[in-house]
Length: 339
Ligand SMILES: [Ca+2]
Ligand SMILES: [Ca+2]
Image (cartoon, rainbow, N blue to C red; front, top):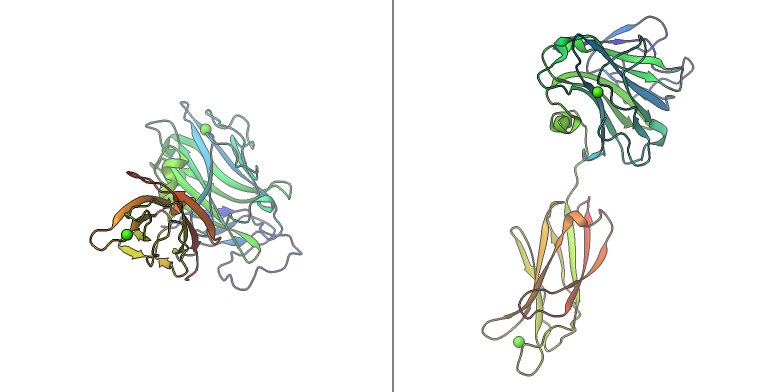
């Protein structure tokens, strides 16, 4: 059930090169009267550096409507959510004009705006999705008059790139309006016009996520190297220990070789590939090897969510637990590629 978008016949400068050939679904882009486009078509914005999302509406009783922008990286992970509650991202490349509770007060002037400086966005941002939601409890788009969302080219006299009539959205309380995505050194805009439900951008985030893509998959492979131990406890009667370390994560469990009679062991052959996920925790335990029952020296754990991607880090962790002392040094590489 494709809603019809009203594209005001402008997507690129008259002398702009044709969009990259890899994109087959370009809408006809031309100067002149409005062009009717089906949703699902996208077109390039090759010379557009700044755009503005505009939202306007009127209603008989006061109904608060909000415009929001959600940005995502190439893995589909949320970067920023810009809304009346959170009005700018850190580098101010996406800025909300501020909350309007009453809607349009002057014809042709948007009640809420979100400015996006495409040229200044962090390189990690690959997708931006614009949403509109009715914040007032119990209200929906059917109670609004003349409600619209539009995208303007702020580098070209605020020319209207596309517009969506929110009356099409009936009894829903939110609309996922349009998607911007970056590909082959250009930004593209794709109209969506998908009805959704939720009073805030945060509430809409799970519904928005299915329009983010195509995304790349992280390989989620982690290489763990147990390097050395320092000042480990002496648990054998000869005032020394025979240490080794176990590494476990979910079903994965491995251990280092035992180093005999050494409280400051250095392992040469203790590298493991853990098929870990980004949020996983890797647990380590150090033991003194004995003939009968090994004695535990202590434990520590590392949360992979605190480790950067694709950059090996060296961590020195104190052992904790009953009678624990000393520390273990490990290296961790959380990789987006197979190792
Ligand atoms: Ca508002
Ligand atoms: Ca021992």
